[in-house]
Every structure is written in structure tokens, then in C-alpha cells.
Length: 536
Image (tube, rainbow, N blue to C red; front, side):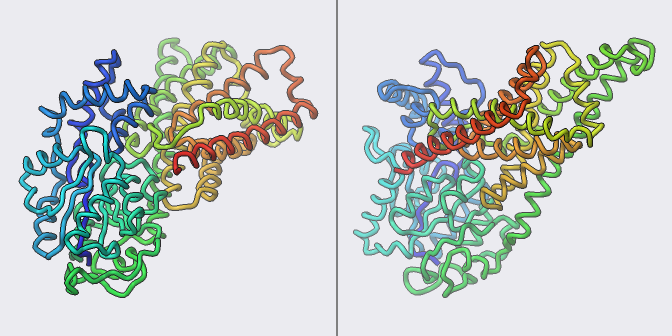
């Protein structure tokens, strides 16, 4: 299919996590920063190192360069060998070379290290061109690396981008391919954040090396491992360099790479299949969170009953509600820990987006204002009259010591619910739906989960805003903060202050809703400008 195939190295050919993250740990330690979790350092895999140190640890340019030098102290000796080839990659490179294709490496890693790694794995012989960055800081961006590969290919008489494909695991690889007009296949087994490859516009996304083989060589199976990308127009370049096909079953004559792949013998997931897979994962996460919370809460209440040697219902009202709140807090914490352990790899913790720090101010104001405004709407409409369940839940939640209420509803509930409803539910829906649809559906799921009319209306509105915040900031920390502020503001203003009822009047309700709208608009503007700066 293609006469020239450009490969990224880290996260595409080999898994470099141990080496790269270990060397980042080493560099950070020289600044007195201890980072024991390698998972937190995964965003360093792919982008230029200096930029990552500045982005994630607020280093100055000088500090970042010093950190890069410390990183290389360890990487040049040990770190470059602390990685492994992805299963099946060696055989795929062998077969691609045998098919007559020209193979090249286009990596942001310094060329000298790339050469050592390829030799170490015994795959250097498959590559005609190897291009990386320079140790002096030149050619660190993927667009520059890919342009240099194109220049060297042109010197060989192979300068037609329509016969080239870039294969990588990050948005930078997709953008590098676009910069020269080449096709792009993204691999999701690397280190991209959820939605990153789709948003970048990858033509096809494959989930494992067998899926990659099926795209490039028309293999007979892909392990159900590929999904069509955005269908971006890519021209009709099914023919390989000499006029023969690179594989024996690649389709020709289609207008997009994803259409050609769908026409091959490989199996693809239909859009419908992807949607229902996302819905199933979302439903499983919600069900797990509910069941785990219920089981832990029941176990705690049973233990309390045994200790008191009486039925829990026989306790006085305040004591009964206190222990219910204790059980709720502990069960929420337990469910959070378990759900985090199961689904943390699907959740965006480290943002790849530029964040305008000033935008945090309107975000916090929005969280507080919409929480009070919505409580005012629900109170003034007397919707609670139609929900006895809500009245019982509300009485239980607010009949508790202040410290327990803050821990339970201001900290633990936002942690647990955001991991599930934004991290998993919205994250999965966002992969298969456009932002507005994913926002609304995830908000509805959040509302319905609460089980009573009043909380369903409130949680649906708040849930939609939480999803937007997650989308705009690209990290689960943002909706966690938003959720915590909203819960704490309601708890303090309406329940602890003697004049809290003032906030539930018509003028106050209107004021807070107008403040919410203004804060939302300002937040959208600030984060929109930050996104434009990042693209520019």
C-alpha cells in the first residue's frame, strides 16, 4: 500500500516506560523532587523533554535544560536499554522490509540514542533512514523530524507524501504526518491520553501490532484491534512504490485510508459497535461503584449493630444518622479506591492541553454560583414535594458533624464520582460521540444515578458542566476541584450559616444564575484562547 513507512520509536515500536520514567525520576531527584509513581511520569513519553519539565513541574527554561542533562546522565548509560519491543513488532518490520517498502524512524529522541536502541534490539537493518533530535536541542519537534526524513527520502527519489504513512502513538506524530501531507496510522497501545488521537485527526487507530499488520500488509486478522478514525481525506494512494501492492489484500481506489482498511480482510469495529462498547464500559463502571459502595456500607452498618448489640434503627435519630454518614463516607472511599484501581488507565490525569491558570478563578466561581443557583431553583419550585426520598436523604446528609460532612461530601464524594462519571463514563462516550452529545449523555447518567427527582435534576445540570470542565482542562483534577467547591459551598452557605435561607430567595437565585452564565462564558473564552496558543 505504501512505498515509505515512517515509525515513531517510543510507544510505537518499543515500550520505553521503565527507562524514560526512571530517568525523569532521577532528574527530578536532583531538584529535590521525589516522584515514586512511574505512572505519573507517562506524559514525558513522546514530547520534547525540556517542554515537559516546564509544563508539568513549572521549571524555567534554564532549569528544564539542566533537568534534561541530568536525565541524559542516566539514560545514556542505563535508561536507553530499559525498554522492550512490543510483541510481534520484530516480525512485522521484517515482513514490511521484505515487501519492498522503505522504512524510516522519525523520533523526538536524540538520534545517537535511537541508533543504540535499534542495534540493541537487532532491528537496525530494517531501517533505511533514522532521524531523531540533536543533543544540542535542535530538531526536537516532530514536524522538524518528519521534514528531515522527507528531505532524505527526496534525495533517494522517494518524495511523494501520498505514498508515505507515519505511524505513532501521540498527537505529535499525527501532526507531523499532516505537516508533510502524509497519511497517519495511530496506535492506541502507546501513551496517548484518552481521545488524544481522535482529536488529532488520525485516519486509523489500531489497538495492537496485529491490527497494524492488517492495515499495512492486509493480514487475515487484526484481533478485532482496529477502529476507523475520523475518515479524513487522504487521497487515493493504495499503490506501493513500484506499482505493486505492499500487501496481498489491500483495497484500492478508495478516497480515505479508513475506507481502504475497511475494505480489506481485517476486521473492524463498526461505529455502532464502538458506541455500545463505550456504553457497556460506562454502565459497568456505574454498577460497580454502586454495588461496591452498597456492600461496604452494609458491612459497616452490620458491624455497628453487632457492637451496639441492638438494631441500628433503635438508636436515637442523630446517632443513627451519624453512623449512616460514617458508613457512607467509608463506602465512598472504598469504592473510589477500587474503581481507580480498575479504570485508572482510561482516565486523563496529566493534561496535554495548555491551561490558562487565570481560568481557575471563573471555574471556582461557576462551581459555587451554579450550586447555589440550582438549589434556589429547586427550592422555589418546591420540587422536593414530589420526592419523599430526597427529603429523607437530605435530612440524613445534613444531620452530621461539620467535620464529617466536609470529608464525606466535600472531598470523598467528588473523588469517587469523578473517577467514574467523568473519568470513565464521559471518557468512553467522548471516544465515540461529539462533545455536546457526550456531555449531555454523561450528565443524564450522573443525574439518573442519584435515584430521586430533585437530585436527578440538580446532578444532570452539574454533571454536564463537570464534563465540559474535564474536556476543556484535559485532566480529572479539574472536575474534582469543581465538584468539591460546589458541594462545600452548598454545605457551608445553606446549612451552617444562620442566614442561609437568604440565598434561596428569587433575587438571590437570579443573581447566582446570571453569575453562573457569566463565569461559564469567561471560562470558555480563557480556555479557548489557551487552546489556540497551543495550536499556534
